[in-house]
Length: 131
Image (cartoon, rainbow, N blue to C red; front, side, top):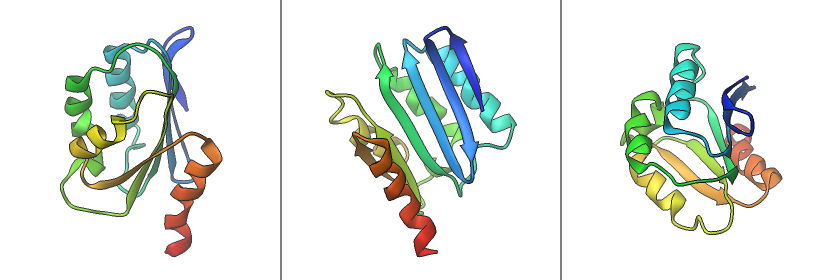
């Protein structure tokens, strides 16, 4: 696990038992997100068998959609080949179209929005129980 950023404005990435978790807090800069994804890639954390949880409930600011598109180079789930990779998102109010847009950038994964972490983790774990 590691964080990139300053104070409350940071991104944390953790990998545990196949669960890859991204937590964005405060006003995380695009440069910090790029740095974090680069470090995660260099350390072999971004794998196609990961179950991905993205928590942006404490994120503030605007989303740089160009950067989100460009970050596809790091994600094994960005290909158009449909897999059972799952990406769960913990979202604040007002992010209704967020998952739809992300799904268009990362079509190789199944995407779903949640309000609570336990529901998100339960949905992610369904893949493991089906195997």
